[in-house]
Image (cartoon, rainbow, N blue to C red; front, side, top):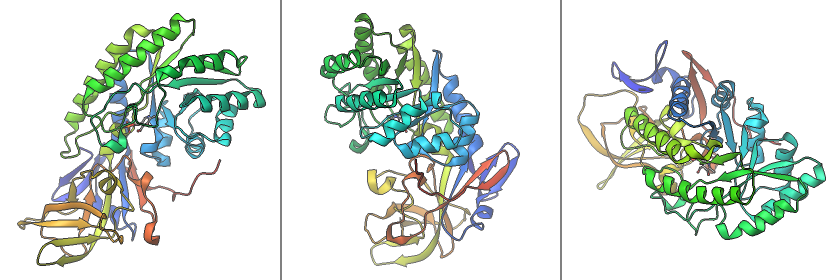
Length: 413
Ligand SMILES: Cc1ncc(COP(=O)(O)O)c(C=O)c1O
């Protein structure tokens, strides 16, 4: 377990020993994220190990943009999936070589595309005919051919929160198969300015059922076969990310079983294709290996509710207020006193600033620390300074050392 209680203290356990989180919180007056990078790297290896087809794994950087984490992934030879010029630059800064970068996203600007073409990244995942037109024009202007993949919208309904489904026909992502004639003729007429290297599909995030993912792959595979039969020499098939975790409990063995099942089902579904299969996992790689820690500022007992008001909240982890997401809330020090029901809330002037409602926790006091579990994905990356609070600091435990991460500044490119 990356984070577990030892002698009643919540600790990060790592190969060389144990670091109690109460020792890390003393290093910052503000709320902090702590990551277990050994755990992240182990998870990546397990993900890779579950695949039995020629493949490459491109971590979805949007899930976690911590530089120390990204650098370790780059050094270990993994690839990355980016969705903006800032993420592209960050990936380069952290040591990913361009041929290990794929670029997704519906709204790529002129300067973002120019940068991708100049760097000669592995592939640009095209989301609309207009975007393809822009890529072709820019590739001609720069005088450098761009590798493109068409992102398809398979019209599959993934069972997840509506805000994180992306492969349904009502979503803005990907392209309907009726776009194909126009896309193909654009590439044909581009006089080599772009090369069509493959297709890509991603139907959503926090998916706990395999069936919709496999259905999306099967539907996209039909289009792949059709294109091959029309003479397109496709080299890659990108199955996106999306695999979820069970936030209600912290059992890593359950994740590992789900990864093994996913890896074997996707390998099976794509084995005959004879092309490189690209994966873009985000959440399942990092979610378990991060916690956000805040300090109780006040206990407020009303006739109706007990509130524990922390110095962290929706500005540091948006998932509960954005998606009504559940995160386990763990006191840093276990107490033997009887539990009581609390609403664990933050300092932000919004009633949506709730990290957990009616949570049974041992009697809390001012000065206690609480860890928001499984906060390694879509946590710090979404943090903001609303109400002019400071951003959380980030610490990374790797090879037995707990290192503070350089403070986050927007990446210019
Ligand atoms: C194109 C694309 N690839 C990969 C991911 C990563 O998804 P997840 O973190 O659910 O694995 C996302 C996130 O939604 C995405 O939009």
